[in-house]
Length: 120
Image (cartoon, rainbow, N blue to C red; front, side, top):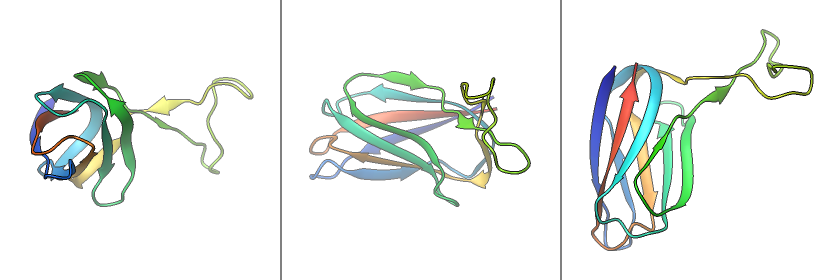
């Protein structure tokens, strides 16, 4: 397991964009550690190379841990389900020599917080 810690500081308008170093592996979790970001911060976290959504959260007020997963599909592109019409089968998201892009909004005027990205 590898941890990539990204400290983020917002601009006067409350926005910021930050990146992990290049990494490869299966995304295990994303942990937000609040320092002094304003309540109600929004996160949009994606793969830089493809723009694949890894996590999108709005109005976050406190430190939190998320375990993002993606729905899986059959060889013909049909959604894989646990039972007909049932819950989607989900799997961890793979990243290959890519950076995780972390965009924040409504974080407050020159405020900070930290995002930890764990990859297996």
